[in-house]
Length: 382
Ligand SMILES: Cc1ncc(COP(=O)(O)O)c(C=O)c1O
Image (cartoon, rainbow, N blue to C red; front, side, top):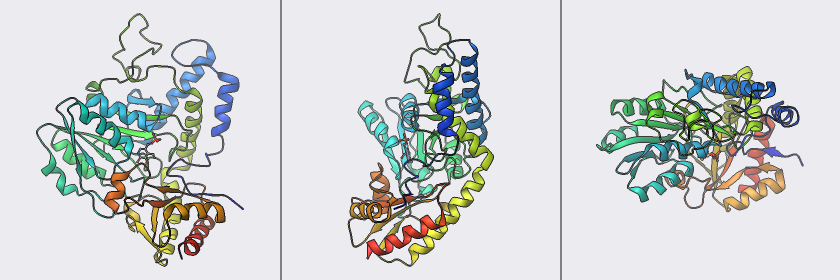
């Protein structure tokens, strides 16, 4: 039986040709770390890291690659931003569609005198943007929002939210885990203070690496969570004040840097708009097919212009975990069932506590994959 990978919202698979080879080349033939030694292979490695920063800056229309901070991943970046920014007495706003990469750090901070409120979302997962202004308090300093939902694919209007934050002097942090590499994410148009992305989802790189892009005035207010060797300013026991070193202590994940740089080159050559067109054509096909199947309920929106290719369904006649198991064992279809680390999103979508079965197409998915998934849903759900 052929395997059909439809779990791209968890992590993209396969990776573009060349990604694994580049990681192997680094491990077999380069081996050097960056910022520490001056021999030529170390210089080459430094150039690859710089190219990666430049590619990320270009993709997000960001002007200064030195403010592109490499992180050990999306979750690490979110923790650095949330915990490095909020102080006792601060209030923070989040959407009701957040992933636990946002909610768990914030919940931890409630033990240190920080409070938060959830901006309501409708049953399709769209934020009630008109409610934001009424929820802002004198001590509200931060708004954190998932751009695209990892449960339903619902995409929020980041530009409108950014304008409200700017008008009230509130920092705006975007979790672009499900949109980066899928749709255009424009740092300045959205009025962002910080943008966090993982390397391994729509940006098609390996796991264990991500990035946070920081606006200068926001970076100046951020306390680095991790302190250590940077290979620079080694005469001092204090962290350097300059970027990116201030936020990049410790030896970086160089195999990850090489692999991600290769993936970003693929994205640059292919074009996010082309990847988007492919994924949305498949999503349209999938949603059209789902309209004829009344044994499942779609969680989220049917509106193709306001979503990405993450499609969650709730099986009405059988348990979602059993459906996911049968999808794999009977059809070779790999999905993810349950609550997807986002209980708040499932509550908004009215799929809590049963969760959903999530299908997420990627650049390598085909019409045949979608048709097989539809046929499987039809048979299993009956
Ligand atoms: C919306 C969203 N935010 C954050 C994360 C966390 O990403 P990672 O597990 O790669 O750190 C994910 C991953 O599933 C996600 O979908």
